[in-house]
Amino acid sequence: MNYFEKHIGDYLKDTSHLSLLEHGVYNRLFDVYYTREGGIPDEQAARLIGARTRDEKTALKDVLQEFFVLVDGAWTQARCESEIARYRDKQAKAKRSAEARWSGSRPQSDGNANASPEHVASDMRTHSEGNAPRARPQTPNPKPQSPEETAGAVSPHSPTAAGEACKAMKQASVIGINPSHPDLQRLIAAGVTTQEFADAAAEAKVKNFPYVLRMVEGRRNDAAAKGSVASKTDPDDWTRHAA
Image 1 (cartoon, rainbow, N blue to C red):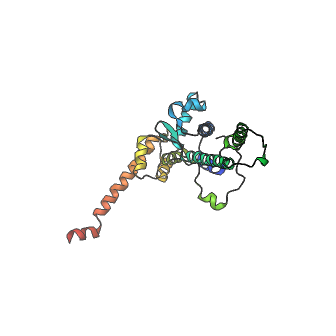
Image 2: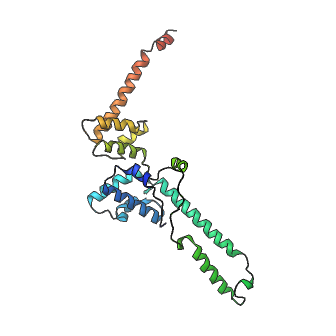
């Protein structure tokens, strides 16, 4: 692929917290992803985007963990896979259309009556190649999206649940953020919301990632304990037991 749509509003909404270096890494990842038409091998990611310095490699790690998912050794992104599948489908349809146009026999009067079979076959190949999607530059679709289409569209840059949580904490100046941290993943699996992480980060006296995670977990445990006590002192509950 040599073209993909980029919706500026969606991009800015979901990536406004990134540094300039992280923006560069993010866009280079998309370039490589679409050029290769597939996920980015974990072991080759730094080389493929040209990340050489420690800061560049750190930014690469953070962006991958926030916006991509590691599957069988390759970093993948759902929207990228969807766009690639759509492109390949259009490519296949164009190829079938070209083949269909040339599959029937043409009257000799339409062309050179003395043309040899080899000459006709050569013309067919030339025409088909000229109609193949890869032989033509891709251009943006000029049709604007309607408000209904825009409202129902899924942003191609939407972070994972861990990415959303980290984004919220980063906006509260929390340092040392790691989207793949096992404690973060465990808390998300337990149902902790992005808003809970954001609230804890905003109120934390120590703007440190592990500290905020412990704070969130402590609040969850306190809430669970209070709920347990409340259920034991519920008059209706005692009445049921007495009955």
